[in-house]
Amino acid sequence: MRGHGQLLGLYVPGQSLLHRAPLALKALLCVGASTPVVLIRQPLTTAAGLVLFLLLMTLGARLPLRKVLGALVPALPVLALLALYSGFTRGPEAAFVVPGGIAVCILAARLLTVTTPGQELLDGLVRLVRPLRRLGADPERFALALSIMVRSIPYLVGSLSDLRDAAKARGLQRSPRAVVVPVVVNAVAYAQATGQALAARGLGEHTDSDDEP
Image 1: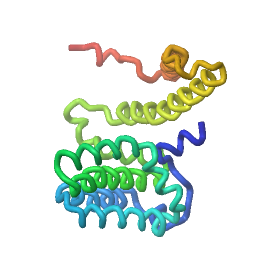
Image 2: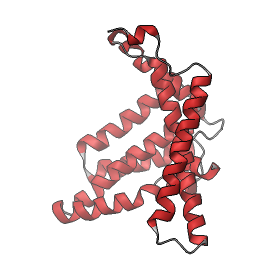
Image 3: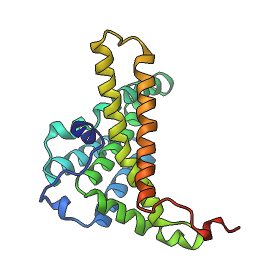
Image 4: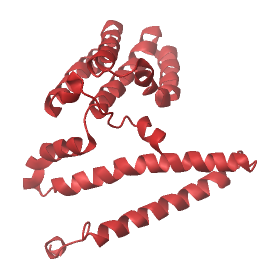
């Protein structure tokens, strides 16, 4: 599953300037640099955003260019469709600006995740939603749910890939049932195992105060 984890841009240990920068500063940098690209939607702005994040990741975070560009590979089919549709409906400029803006956002999110440990990211999210506690929100439970989601996606992606290879080895690559049914069974089993593990640790259970109107 290790390769599937990298698909999501999980933390890559390092001693670069961006690795040592505070989470808040990196988040402000990513949001501040990607927002103009999304709002202005001009070819020059989009190109500048792409170049900026490529430089930040290769020079600032000291990541190989191959690994940086690999972050866009899973999104290429969607980006290509958006480019075709935007170019057909709004012209060649939109064919670059629309998918280019999404690519900038993907690179910005990856920059944040590859240079920040997962636990630090979760702690930052807890601090971000902590003011909502007055409205009845539970920041710790929110972080727990997000952590489970982040851990589940690589498992499910890896399960799909393994089952697809197994079906291909049996000559059933054209049978959706040979892949879909085992994937669903594995997903349900994984969810049940996760729920049992949480229950064994006393997490996710409703307290008496939760049952009160």
